[in-house]
Image (cartoon, rainbow, N blue to C red; front, side, top):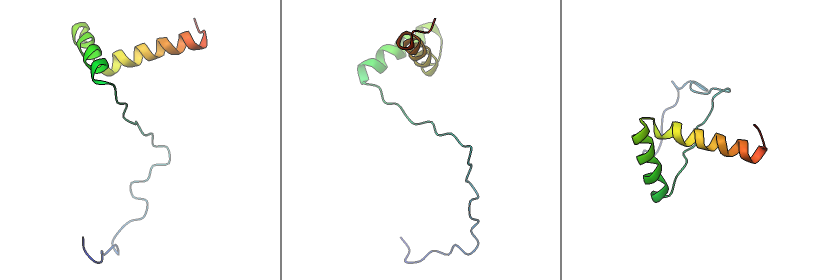
Length: 66
């Protein structure tokens, strides 16, 4: 690392987005990932779509939504 950095030409807040949304990573156990990856591939859908659909169904079950 340098001892000093020159920020005189920097622009404060250039990349700040107050409405920005962060997508945090979700880590699955290896066996769960393998299982759902294979099922998603067999159905021809992306893994994220399959996992999101399953989680939405679980939410409906938990909340009693029908």
